[in-house]
Length: 295
Image (cartoon, rainbow, N blue to C red; front, side, top):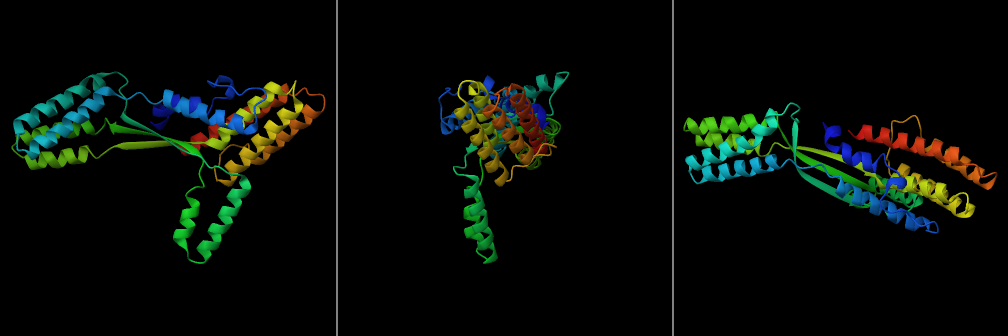
């Protein structure tokens, strides 16, 4: 179900390249400027491709919450009316041929960017280990908190398999003059949400954009293309040191080797188009396998 809910977002963020980004770095942009644009595009894509919320589910939730308030005020008639409305909002969804199992009611996007190098990560991790050896757990924890660089996309949903039945059961309890039982069921129903979070590592987005930028300028500006590829390799180092792993048969080592092959070709005959395509394909597959691991 996670894949169903987040396919639009992940297709844009994880499988996309700079070629389809809203903004493309200028051919004379610095590595830092390319990275800034990559992150800006990723944030924009995440916002534009947020999972469409099911309005009926949101309204049903509001009516169910109103029913709880009604019961607190001992107004069972109003509670019954609100529950009928809450159930009614779900009937159209439940009658659909391919009714979803989860009804999205909220989207949250959180961006945490690590500003530093792979060497900075190594130093921090070394210090953390030393602090832990000395029993200074909280000091170590504080150093660990910044060691993250990712876009977290969270979708909160109502489970269609249990939520409607809970509303019907609450209505039955009210009908049977058991308002306390009805409240108990509603409290449980209104606290039973499914929360799914996908993690998109920022350094991999930056690496992909730098490789794409290098491929665009390789023919006319060898030096800049090589700098972009150095930046892409640095971004991969950061991703690896921060612990973003993939089940892909492609490894960070292989990606670094592929980058070096492209750089060597650029310095020579400069017929690197095919090598660029192979590098992009390997990085894309690496990211796809990382995504599947997060499900």
